Amino acid sequence: MRLAVFASGNGSNFEAICQAIQEGRLAAEVACLIYDRQAAYVKERAAKYKIPAYYVNIRQYAAKEDYEQAILTHLANERVELIVLAGYMKIVGFSLLQAYPKRILNIHPSLLPQFPGKSGIADAFAAKVATTGVTVHLVDEGVDTGPILQQVAVPILAEDTLETLEIKIHAVEHQLYPAVIQHYMEQLRKGATT
Ligand code: GRF
View 1 (cartoon, helix red, strand yellow):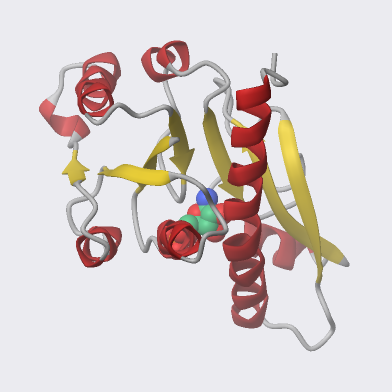
View 2 (cartoon, rainbow, N blue to C red; view 1 turned 30 degrees about the vertical axis):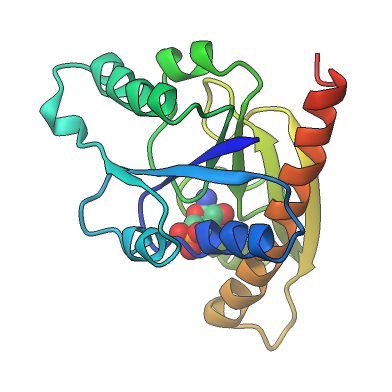
């Protein structure tokens, strides 16, 4: 299956997906990277893996719909079948949702529905909960609200700092996301997602 990864920043999850493919743990191809911030480090990772990377700047469009139409043109050219959000900092709009129904996945660094939004790790740490984690879910029109595919819990220990918690969460993400993508593609093939 041909994937597009959408990212806005560092891209460690993008790289984890590329690595899983190289190691045969994920039977897919990253057809392209879509990124929305020119300085995003993820573009360097795409170059390393020789994956086409398209920068789409929302400021060049009158409306979000036009921005998403520009993205959809890249996705059509690259014959993308599944969209994987990995640190993509925009809310997905109607045009993309309509074009890829049940085919947009997201990873979020908390046990949703707890701590949605931009700073899931820091919010859980500040709330002093005993356990946080990682969620992979389908994307709908809300912020981190779509149907949950899988979650992994990560305990917050007394000795944890925000930095050690971030390291643990990201390590879980890098294992979990490729595995859930693989499983979800198998479900799609069986028609088991409707
Ligand atoms: C991850 O923590 C992911 O859960 C969240 O954004 C972060 C992206 O990190 N949605 P990276 O860019 O993949 O390193």
